[in-house]
Length: 632
Image (cartoon, rainbow, N blue to C red; front, side, top):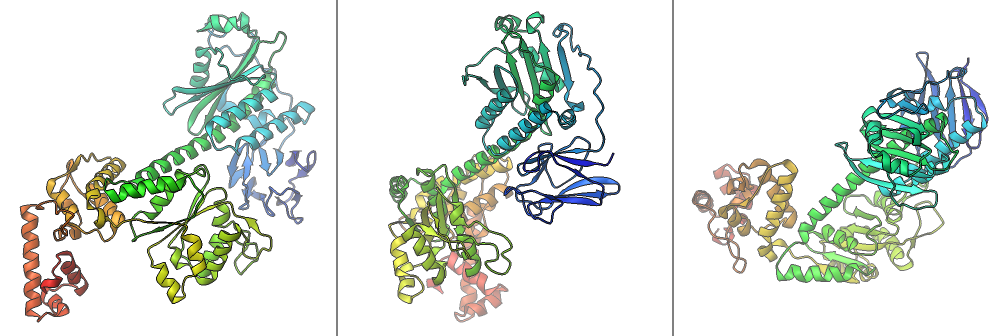
């Protein structure tokens, strides 16, 4: 027969499209062979093409992807019985007329466990849910296809394990005449870690399930249907199961590329209610769809957990026992609970973004997005598009609508780093956002409400910018509602050991090296150095020491040369003591060489650099590090 595509649901439900040409396209545009009036469908969504005698489905960079059997694909060779989801439409691909399926003989897995003649066992490796449901489109098949489409659509929108499990059980109870349902989840080792139960009345009270049954389903990767459970003997836990007066049960593993992630279980105690083979196939298909959604959610949760761990680690930039840092931590804690605009000031590397994230996490908006933009890295045109977004055709190259960062931060926090670098034209638009709490995309005329909290940061002197006319005074006062100046690291030297120990632990864990601390000489080096790059420079220095060093303690030779060349700290901070005989001797010899060369060059540093065969810039750095300027 000629291959065909049948619409099982959506605006074209019931229509069939023959694939007797070179191929066809599906999309929202009128020029497509399959025209779908659905906003969830792209103008050119996907195409079915003939390649070497095979029919291949190719996604045309659609916005919401194309799914085959519940899995998003870029390109996929189609097989008889494949289910294709495009937006809100479900299509059945067929290359032959289905013949009546031969009667299925019950499979006896283990006579000790399975003795009922009404037990059916489906091996997952041999089961294809799309083929099982690709029968003639009778009323029940249509309902089953609609149910699978509902399940696929609902599950792929959920981004957390608990609500996904709850929704899966709700949909399973809507689809199958079961009284109770449960989802048992496994960890990567195959151990059961959690479960959720649900019945038709909405109760989540746990109920007994045979462990032997579940373990066999996982081990054999098999879906199981068993009727007349009361006559089935030999189960582990049979007393509790039979005491529940079960009439029929279903169990299907959630098995995918990452292995078996869980088991979907349903049963009923209602007299005369029994599940059949079609119920088994439907539940197995639903489990096949759910495993993709569950794997995606677990991956997303793992990424979010890692992100949170990293962000908590970055909070080390706010760690400190100095009086100045304790004062700032108290101030940030008080400000976080409000919606007030905050202006963070301080040198580069002092942890302004870390402070902004701390404000966000301590605010009522913590569950919403935190969106950061570095205003110094983009041109005026790109920054305008990045902040406000644009409509399709707003300018050359705007081939589609783009959501800006302000819109992406709706309900959450927008962090504008290097706010002093924003061009004057954009300053006026940003002022309107703060005053009117609304904005417009580039090329649009309809305003959009801006439900955001703004946190800005700068290392520039904005008051000087106002005097020079490069920064708007009215914008400054809108930003400067609450100003927090973060101190340079040289102003809180007592915090250096604490920060250094934290970074050593963090990077040691990251690369698998055990770091117990620092030698006294290495600690002295850290305390003597002025840290012009602040916390960021300290973190980089410790990461280098952890990666290149050996042993359980970080030694002076593991640190960057600039740190080793540092002169004793100014009074008030403590120099931490000697850095070791070797390094003190080397530093003293370097200083003598430099001073002798400058004397020989008559005080000309450039000429002295030539005598020492050094780059003048490097010699200037040595003079600064050794604090030799007054002696030259």
